[in-house]
Amino acid sequence: MYKALIVEDEDLMRGYLAEKLGDLCPEWEAAATAADGMEAVEKLAHERFDAVITDIRMPGMDGLELARYIRRSDAQMPILILSGYDEFDYARAAVRLNVFDYLLKPLNEDELASALSAMAEQASARRAAAGSPLLAAALQGDAEAERTLLLQHSPCALALLAPAYQPADTERGSRLQALADEALSGFAPLCVGQTEYTAVLIPTQSEGLTETVCRGVLQRFVQTHPDCRCGYAAVGTEGVPSALQKALPALRLALALDAPLQSADWMYEQRTAHQQLQTMLQTLNEALVQGALTQERQAALTAMLAAFPAKARVTVAVSLLSTCDADAGVCAGALARLKGGEATAVFADALALLFAGQKTDGDTVSQLVRRSRDYLQLHFAESISLSALAEHFGVTAAYLSSLFHREMGRSYSQYLLQLRMEEAARRILAEPDTKIYDISRAVGFYSAKHFTHVFGRYYGVTPNQYRKQQTP
Image (cartoon, rainbow, N blue to C red; front, side, top):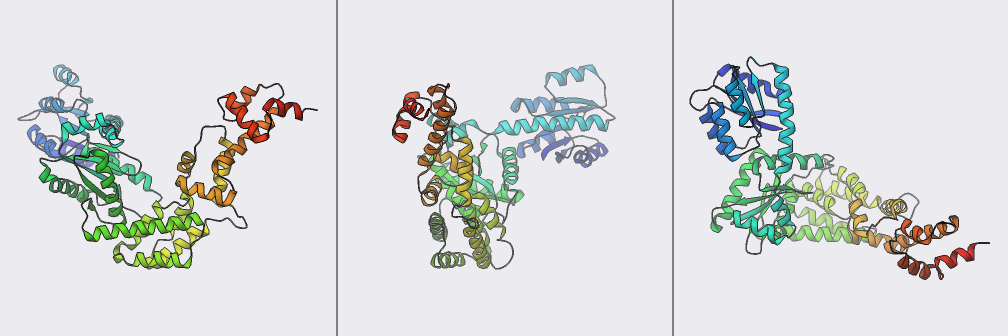
């Protein structure tokens, strides 16, 4: 949803535009109205809008003067000019001010709807480009980007925003994107969307006011976006990456406890809750590696969950299942169990489903290993690492590695090598005229010399010797 400011001195027209805007184009809402340019300037100073729709002839500051004012600070905001006067001079001045469109009164609703639709595309592009490349680079540890950013905006704090956890949250991806759009609208340009959260840099007037200013800004945002959860930390002398390492646990704690705001400066209660969560996650991941949840571990997990405040137990359970190392598909099924009923009881049900999903009926190979094996059989010739494969299936590399060892009796690398060598041997015999160099590339080796060495170690002979031995 994009926010438009309606500027019109005629009461009936202003009311009509405010009421009809969403009907003409559902992507727009009339977020505010103003009776003249000066009132519009006041609203622009305190709220962000995606576009301005303004009459051209108004007392005091008219529409063109308002457009000139906007252009001094924003060269690209869409401005739609409305006028009852078909005068060339006005139109020419509007074109020079780079207005989005110029519509004549009485308004044609089809024309207005088309203009609004086109403006929505421009607003979407502006939001997508609004993310700060400097902040994105600084989060990745780019020292030069960080220096430039902090030179302009220090002292400051780093806030991470994400939507609240919900059991069986099949729409979390779209909710993440919707919150990112709202954050870009409210905090651009010091805002950038990431995979699991939106990062915002909040400048403050002084180091002593960092906590107060940051908390006040975030509280105002949460009031209008109640689904938002925030974790934040001051950006000190250690820089942005260090602040990220402090803000991320704060965000995870806010999500787990379903608390709107969580500072990295934890009190005793928050520190204790964080340690409990870490212990529970470690216990659950250890059980996943071993492929079974003992009664002792289940009892310990249930007891630790019961130690949290009653209102937070479900979100704590969701947090654990959402961040553990289990297969994403199995986790989704387990999360669906966290609906209704007493929290510790539904958590026990979810754990039972989670570990039941580690095995397929009558098979000793888990669903995750089978899916990984099938994927590798299609992609073994590509440069694919264990980390990349684990990321593809939404688990950690350590967890996937342990499953390969336990259930396949070999490491990931050994299995990948087996696939490549078996395919190479097949091709050597089936394609007697194909050069060994071409076969090596077809099975994922870009150096024929390296391929020959590996093949020799695997089969005990060189590729050419293998071809000659097997040829009648």
